[in-house]
Image (cartoon, rainbow, N blue to C red):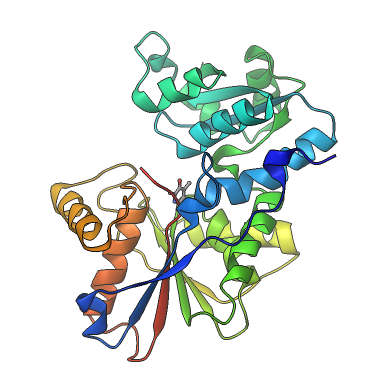
Length: 297
Ligand SMILES: *Cc1c(COP(=O)(O)O)cnc(C)c1O
């Protein structure tokens, strides 16, 4: 039997945003309020975790293990999911130097949701894709028998969950834009869109490594390339979780214009990129552009 928390949910709201910076260029801006898709597991974290949680429960697991940095939204979402479903959760956190220190707000929330935190050395963490290192990490975290969700939650099941987000947007717009960490959400979303619709990803990490990652994720989930997607690089603002003052001011202004809370690590960078790209005439007049609001602060 499906756990009540894991039943399919109605499509998240799609709302028009009245914004002169877009209107001036003939671009219609829509907001896909995926932050409202689930009260406790917002946005793409719900889309990616739900199919994994179903698989874990179906296989009889009572424990989940996953990986993340000290500010990982994915760790927080996994901890909350564990609490909701009554599953034990173990978080393997990058950086054993954190072990003796007070927990930051994000990790404290994980712990409050019942997640057991295990701090790994940076070198073990980096090599966690090697089977031997993984086995050793799981063993020392007491999670050898747990259902393993990869870092950032992006596996084949997660991509198929995100394809549903794309299907919800069929016929609604020309371009769908989303912020990217692992790129799993973009990879799944693109696969769910109609032919003729385009997905645009805005990486929040510097480095330009994402396109091959996305191709490989799509290969594993769908057997090959899926949908039309591109990346807009250059909007990382110095790297993950960096929020320089101009970005902070932009996000606060966007909140006051559109009356919803703007998550800073991903969503603010997406909205900044779209405002800039629109201002420089990237989108032809008459374009309907959807920004996916993947989470909340
Ligand atoms: C995790 C997260 C993302 C990134 O998703 P990926 O699938 O890893 O690219 C985007 N937005 C928010 C709000 C997130 O928490």
